[in-house]
Amino acid sequence: LRSNATHTVCTCRHLSSFAVLMALYPVEPDYGLEMLTKIGLSLSLVCLVLSILTFKFCRSIQGTRTTIHLHLCICLFMADLVFLVGISQTEPEGGCRLVAGLLHFFFLGVMTWMLLEGVQLYRMVVLVFNATIRPLYLYLFGYGIPLAIVVLSAIIRPKGYGTKQHCWLSLKDGLIWSFFGPVCFIIILNIFFFIITVWRLAQKFTTLNPDLSKLHKIRAFTVTAVAQMCILGLMWVFGAFLFDEGMTVVEYFFTILNSLQGVLVFVMHCLLSKQVRDEYVQFLSCICTPQKKRYSDFSSTNPSSSQSQGSRSGQHTGESQI
Image (cartoon, rainbow, N blue to C red; front, side):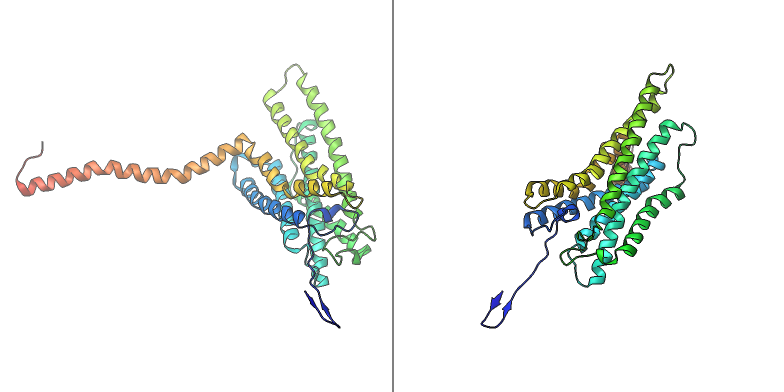
C-alpha cells in the first residue's frame, strides 16, 4: 500500500475457488475463479433450499429415496455454505481447523448419501420384498461414516486441517487422501451397484409377465441416480487432473461444474420430475385460488346487494318491484 525508507505496508487477500479442494499444488489467486465460485454457490444454495423444502413437504414423493435425497441436499447445502463463508478465514487457527473439519465432514456426507441411493436402487431390483431401509440405519451410515473418517483423520493428523492459505486439508502430509480416497471408493461401489441393477432390470424386462409400470419407474430412478453420480461424484474425480500448475482450463471447468451442483440436483430431481411439477402446480393454484374466490364471491354478491338496495329505494319511493 505504501512504503518509506524503513517500512513497507502490504495487504494480503486469500482468494478461494473450488479448485483449492482438489489441486495437488498451491492454487494462484484468480479473481475470475473466485467470482465464478461465489455466483455458482449462491445459485446452488437457493436451489438446494427449494430442493430441501420439496423433499420435506411434498407428500406424494415421500419414501426412502426421498429421505436420501433430503439429507444429501442438506449435506451439500451445509458444505457450500461453509465453503462460501469460511474457506478463506485462516485466522484464528482454531476456527480455520473447524471450517476444514466441517467441509471434510459434509462433502463426505454428500458421497455417503449418494452411495445409499445406489444401495437402495439395488435393493429395489434384487430384493423385491422388504426393499426399504430403516431411517435409523440411513442416519447411522450417512452421517456415521463421514464422522468416523474425520475423527480418525483429526487424531492421526491434527495439524493437517487448515493451511496458511485456505481452511482445507493440507497437501504436505497427504491428508487430502482421507477425502479423495473415500470419494474414489464410493464411486467404484456405486458403479458396481448400478451395473448389477441395470443387468437385473434387463432380465426382468424379458420375463413373461413383467410389472412394466414398476420396472419403468425403477429404470427412471436408475437413470437419475447415474446422472447424479456423474454430477456429484465423477466431478471430484475430474479434479484429480489438477496435479500440475498452469492447468487454468481444468481449474475453470472444475470450478464451474462443482459450484453449480445444487442447481443441477434441483433440475434433475425436482424440475424434471412430473410428480414434483404437479405438486408445484397444485401449490401455486392453492395460492392463487383464494384471490379468485374472493373475486368471484364479490361478483356473486353484487346483484343481490344491488337488488336489496333497489327494494329499499322502492320502499322509500312507493314503487313496486316486479
